[in-house]
Length: 171
Image (cartoon, rainbow, N blue to C red):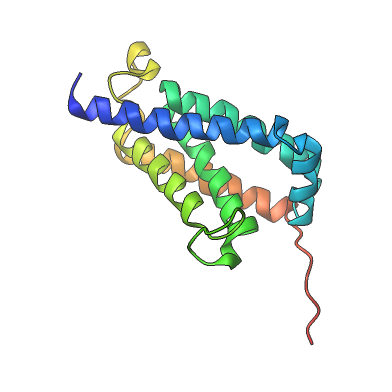
C-alpha cells in the first residue's frame, strides 16, 4: 500500500465516520428525529420529518460507503449534496467561521471539498471499490462530474421543490 493509499484511507475513514455519527445524531441524538424535523421545518425544509429522515439516512449510508470505499464516487456526491443543502439553508447567512453550532459554512464547505477530492482521486487500494475492480472506473474527470452532478443536481432539485423559508417583511 502506497502513502497515497494510506492517506486516502485516513481521509475516507475520518470524513465518512464523522458523517455516520452526524446522521446518527440527526436520527437518535438528544432531540431525536422529531427534534431534527422541527429544526429542518424552522429552516423552511417542508415537510421537516421527511427531510430529517432523508438527511440522517443519507449521511449514515453515504458516510459508511465513503469510509469503507464502497461506491465511493456516488457516496461522495451524496455527501456533497447534503453539505450544499446545509450550507444554503443553515449556514450561508452566518458568515464563514463556526464559533457556535449552527453558524458559518466553513465545516460544510470543507466536507464538500474533501468529498469532491476523494471522487477525483479515487478511493485507493484499501477500499471495497478496489476489491471489486471499480476503483479506477469512477475517478478523475469522470468522478468529478458524477459527484458534482449528484451533489449539485440533487441539492438543487431538493431546494427548488422543498425549501420554503419564511420571508421577513420589508420595513
